[in-house]
Every structure is written in structure tokens, then in C-alpha cells.
Length: 239
Image (cartoon, rainbow, N blue to C red):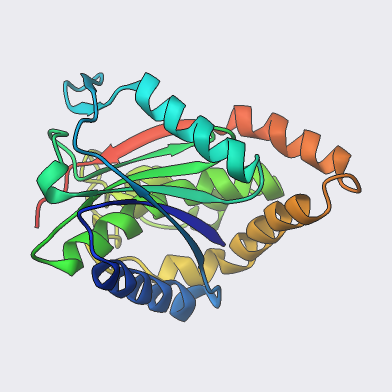
């Protein structure tokens, strides 16, 4: 489980270390997986923006594409799993959201735009966890072929992973779900359920990075699956 953090220069090393520690503890406790972090500094002072379909302002597609192309030039397709655009609150010019997840849009990465709250680390952890959770159904389906939605067929008011597990049916008529809109460390019991598939997916990505020539057929299969599991989804959480 490899995370490349594109850290805003305004975020201190101490602040980032604390976020990494809390996120690692959260993930390891419920999955047994220990994240690996790569760090790269970015200046987010002048990010160009454009409205999405809901009218929220986000980084332009051209900007994000160029940034991910730089990442790809260094890490290749399989050298990292998630890329986190960690933007300090002072540079956050994006409206209506605290984060967005793009899965399989850029080089099979799972890209998370995350607002860094300078006053409350819990808000930052919750946003990072929220966006990472959005990516897990696509990640697992791409690299194992398994649909984790099937694990929740008997769950009351189940719609889908994003709507119910991550958003707690906030935007769905049926409100009787046992799951909450993720704001902090919510719905972690679901991580325990999907942990075996999550480990398999991350192991497969790392294996393809370490042994690219032996696993050509698998690389082609997963690359094709990534086209079938593209998604963009954000959140509007305010704590």
C-alpha cells in the first residue's frame, strides 16, 4: 500500500508526520496493512480552477493531468497506488468540497485531493480516509475482479459502496443504513470485511512493479479492467 503525498509547502514536516502516523494506525488496526509513504513538495499557491458538473470549483483537468504525468515519469504505472494532493487550507480555493477521489483516471492511480486543516488534524485525517475509502471498490475490482458490493447484499438500504459505505446514504432516499457519512474514523468495520481483497489488490500492484516482464498478461488484464472501473467522486463534509 504505497502513498505518494504531494505535500503543500506550507505544511510542516511535523504536521505531515502526525497525519501519516494517525492514518497508518487507522489502516493497520482494521486491515493489518502498513502504508508506505513517498513525499514530494508542491506549490499550490496558483492552481487554476474550473467548475465541475455540480458547480464546485476544482483543479482544472489540464493541471491535474500535467501533475500526474510528472508522477508517472518517475513512478511509472505501478510504482505507487495512491497519489494525495494535500493542499493547505490557506491555498484551498476549491469550493463546495473538502476532497475528491479520481480512480483509474490518471495512469491507474487513485488520486485523492485532500484539504489540510491547519487547526484540526482530525478533519484532515477524516478527509483523507473518506477519499481513500471511495477508491477501494475500484481498486479491488480492477486488480482482483471481485465486487466488494456483494459482501453487503444483506445490508439494509444498501445502494453501493460510495453511496452507502462512504456517504451513509446522505444522497439516497433510503436512510436506514447502519453506516455513517465518513467524517473521521467511521465505518471501519467494513475495512475488516474487505481486508483480504484489499491485501490481494495491493500485492498484485506491487508484484507487477517488481516483476514487470514476468507478469505481462496480468498487467494487460488489469490495465483493461482499469478502463471499466474509472470514477470521480468528491465530498462536501464540514465538521
